[in-house]
Amino acid sequence: MVDVARFFTPKENLLRIIDCMAMLKLNKLHLHLVDGNGWRIEINRYPLLTEIGSRLVERPGQAFSERHNARQGEPTVEKGFYTQDDIREIVAYATKRHIEVIPEIEMPAHSNAALASYPLLACPIVDKYIGVLPGMGGSSGDIIFCARNDSVFTFLEGVLDEVMELFPSKYIHLGGDEARKTYWEECPLCRARMKAEGLGDTEALQGYFMARVSRYVQSKGREVMGWDELTNTDIPKDAIIFGWRGMGQAAMKAAKQGHRFVMAPARVMYLIRYQGPQWFEPLTYFGNNTLQDVYTYEPFQKDWTPEVKNLLMGVQVCLWTEFCNTPEDVDYLIFPRLSALAEVTWTQPVRKNWQSFLKAMDHFNDHIAAKGIVYARSMYNIQHTVTPVNGSLQVKLECIRPDVQIRYTTDDTEPTAQSTLYTKPLQLKSAQTVKAVTFAGDKQMGKVLVLPIGWNKATAKPILGANPEGLKLLVNSVRGSLKNSDFEWCSWTKSDTITFTVDLQKKEMLHSLTLGCITVYGVAIHRPAYIQVAVSDDNRIFRQVGEMHYTSEEIFREGAFVDNCLFPLNVEARYVRVTANGIGVCPATHVRPGQEARINLDELIIE
Ligand code: ACM
Ligand code: ZN
Image (cartoon, rainbow, N blue to C red; front, top):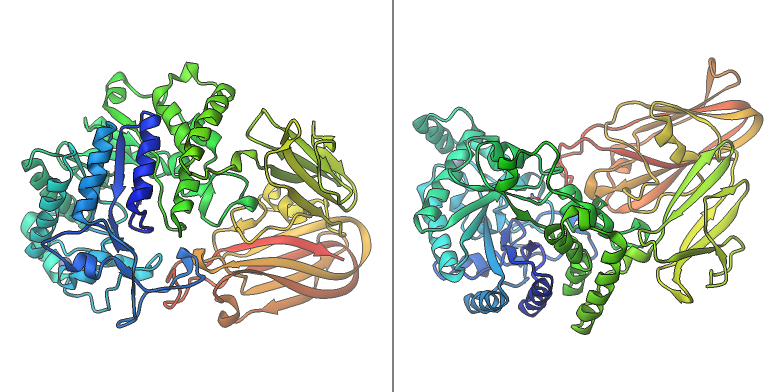
């Protein structure tokens, strides 16, 4: 699946992706054509869909997750769409290569681009401006098609008529994911529909909505597909379910009712996630799905009956493009992980072999490089793990490719093919900079990892509190980057009280304590509202030696940055305790209004 709604992939680039798919014997291309962030297909009957719905306000320099919604009347720029001729060309090109292009028209949610074009299709109680969303959308993401207004169904059928005319595919994907029912709960029309149809709740109302449109599509001789939220209520008859949340478990619910399904679990098959050590990757969302993670995925689970196995139609990777700004960004996230998908789908598990896959993939990569695709080399980068062990720091360096050598230095020089070969974790007892990189023989393969290991009074000392393993990150000397998911940040999901104590193991003169607090506005990570520092000689009786309060203006600043909160101490003590708490929920003006602000801390420095 390619999401051409968030970032519009030009036709030429899409054709090249199709070429590569054909080389890998991948036979279905799911096009996510419309979303809250853009409408990317020309519909003759509804010209505003592309006159308004393909345009967007500019938010220069801001990541998707940080962008505020458009204000009414704010100028927009064209972000692109496929004309009907483009679609015919794409479909013909793919058909020639034995690839079926499956269009997705999202409903009832992810529909702000359609509703910005035709606002009367939203519930009449929506009293705010509906614009195409430049980012997450906040509470505007709750604006969805009204489930009572018959014009909505006339509109969707009209759109689908043209879509079915353009795409001869056996399957039509109707979306159905992430529909928040805020407006449906309140809308008198939607409530009337629920009453008239005897629907117990708004989830059942979505079931009604999806079933009604499904029947229309099926009446034209096509089959219906949808995301796994369709299992939240009665599943439309014969609908094919895409398991995407977590490991795709919801698809099992459908399978048990006899529905066919496709596995596209976000945890392993979403290409939006980082494909390598995060310090080297462009900003994106969530955790990692490396080339090896994709390769290792096995859809069949031990507890699947033969009946369930028979209902699995295939496996899909999904490229969501929130963080893509150029066609090259799209290629980078797809390749080489698409090769791993081909192996998952075409190779018997017993025949899978990571090393031989890498060899074959290297040859394949030469072919796609000849086509002008710049594939990611993340597979050659080094993931570090620095862990306090008995007062020293253990530095582990790992690369997912077993056919490279890791070489490193600790004297600040650049590593070369003659530098020390890494064979086992290093044990450090003092400050030094570790620089490491992968080689294949004399050839440098990855990027140089630089680990500036400092040493302060807290470094590698025991740290006590709930989740002591996680807390070790605070005293491992490696500072988290501006990516909060880089495995260096100690994170709390709630604003509840946080408390941890460092045992310096002997009474010492302490001059200051510094606590690093990251702000990542787009994902609602903010500094604490309150931090207190207390010391003790016996870990029982503590005396407060510093505290700081932050105002909501200081907390809810935009951007991604680290604050070093400095507490002068000038006391003698053995135990140092930090207590902190968060501010609670993000305000209405935030890009994540009403969501609980999270706290991420790293590093704890005592001097
Ligand atoms: C999805 O990722 N919302 C299908
Ligand atoms: Zn309504």
